[in-house]
Image 1 (cartoon, rainbow, N blue to C red):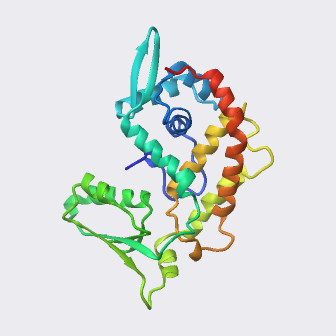
Image 2 (image 1 turned 90 degrees about the vertical axis):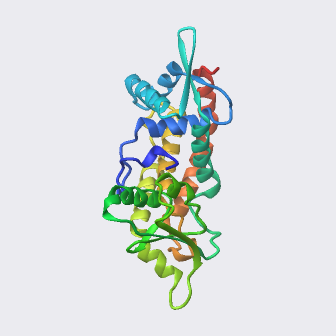
Image 3 (image 1 turned 180 degrees about the vertical axis):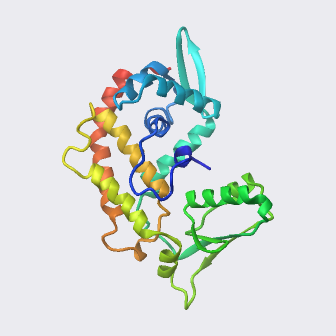
Length: 280
């Protein structure tokens, strides 16, 4: 699993769950630490997160937990503790950056190819079967019929299969729909498009307003919350082909809102972060 955002969160949530400190931390690290070869003083991270109402205890707990998981390194300079990225964390954050800024929310470049994953395993491996299903959903697959999952485009599931030790139980194919099967029917059979649309509408309700998140103290706080909300959203989106979705698909409007706000917040947020953050 490439990113810890979705662990423990219901796949059928139609509104945003309470934002977890770890989710915000990934956004913070992706914006202010990734590709900079720096470590950040824990006290300055606490100052940033206080703007979002996150307690010092929650920040310290999150940093400790991410260090134990091999996502952060820790070193001391005098009485200060600094945290930097491990190579694994850098890979995770780069994946998130690509989803936000390159993959996007609207799939206009689909070439008609589907990735199919079929599997069968005994009841003795029920837990592993559950893990595989969860990871396939997170990777953008939908259940077409019993034991057969599909996703638009070519998906590499090698890491998932290998991690779970299922090389002998899983078949992966790339295919195209042939008559009488229609790709539009596959989209609506395997994916709950109403639920996906509802998530985008929830994002728009939160951000497509005059002066969104006005209760927050500054644009640094708004920037981190915006990026966290958006990444959480696009990571749940299977990136279905736009040609088989309604013309008023809410992801189109939501993506425009995200880019507009992200650009508006960037300058003021970076200026403020430069004054707050203690980097080494």
